[in-house]
Length: 453
Image 1 (cartoon, one colour):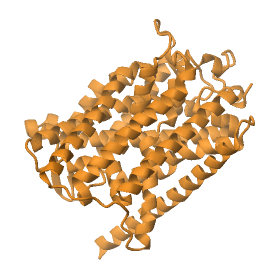
Image 2 (tube, helix red, strand yellow; image 1 turned 90 degrees about the horizontal axis):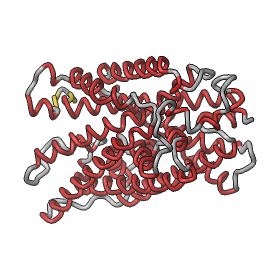
Image 3 (tube, one colour; image 1 turned 90 degrees about the vertical axis):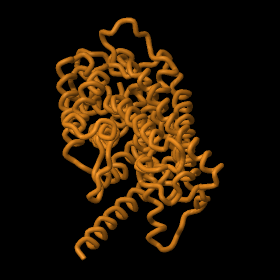
Image 4 (tube, helix red, strand yellow; image 1 turned 135 degrees about the horizontal axis):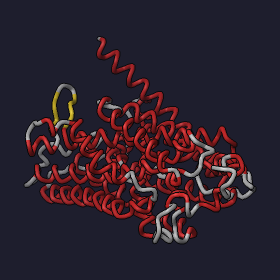
């Protein structure tokens, strides 16, 4: 029996984890004989397309259009390769979870470290999602200026249009029902809607861009990065964690595979999802940088807050913001699903599967939701912290752990190509993260000195 199943078996009386892979997450729910191909594609694509999509146009502004688009494609290729390694090595080690695979390769300490990284990454993402939803609905303050949210614009300032009230209503009416499902496949319809809303954003952005191109009111963006000094060169590496964050979905690979009617379809599902998401990312980045040029903000959604220079500008701004806010609401439960599973694995490694224990399921769900809700209400801006998370936990989950498992090669299944690509992924992850963190720290100190002077 593999190490991970022997050491981390949920109960002495239960069968090994690999034998439960199609029962753990939907125990007691009749009429379910496995998830479909399309449902799995939508769920995986929704895991991928989260808040990261809005930072990609700024990535092109930093890198230049040509290197930026190439970087998005390469990030997608490396992501697909790393997921393929997780699937292949998972089958070789007979484990049905990402943490079980890492536990098989590196023991309990490796398993715990991975679960901790996933928890940190997912909590950070979900708090950011709620903050963005609050910004969209209720508005935000920046440099002493108040930017109105759509509810405030439509109905004026009332107690029920405040950030805390709107986030509470969203939590009770949207999040609570969706995070109560014990099967990730139960979210397939909301995931399909979420992907559709991401496409709506791309279509609207493309339409505005085409209209302005016809009017001749769009300039040509930079094709290559602008390197004026050494600092500007090193700053290029800060885009790597953003690209990795945009594609991160590794924590949901095994939960989705475990529910499939035919697990052999998982490789095709991954390729379809990554291709779909890459197309959305390329279109968003291309039309976003064409539309806003050097005025592109770190979060391109903030650019849709003024006159776009075309008729019905205000209406289009509202449609973009509302559709993206709803999109994040529907991404939230997918990311929450793997967060809950991994936190449960950290706190109760020897307990019965979470789906069999309704009391534990409820307590962990309520505690996590309460913590995320408080974070979104009392942390006004966590983008700096989110950048650190992306450069550490996210990069580890997406690149470092899959590459380390391949290099460890416990069962002798790694090819020379696997090991070569693994070294490339580790080099890119470690070097870019180091530069990104150093650059962020430097920027903070420079900003503080500027304020002090």
